[in-house]
Length: 73
Image 1: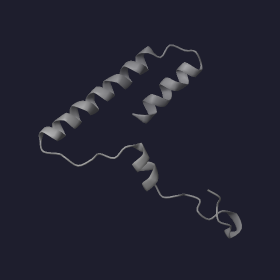
Image 2: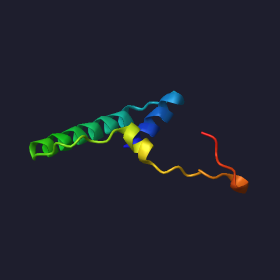
Image 3: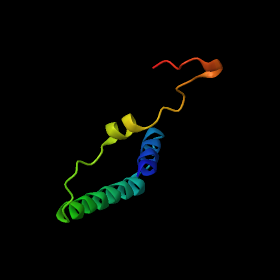
């Protein structure tokens, strides 16, 4: 999904027609909403992670920089 969103943004930034890719993005969003609805109907009740949760939980790649110096945050 992120790849489709990036391609739509790229096409828009280059002033190109993004109709096909935007429709694909909307179809993916519909599918995700349907899957979430099915999950909830089946008894799913946990809070689903959002992008902030995923970024916060992602390990920092460069905690220690060159020559052992801690990277600035």
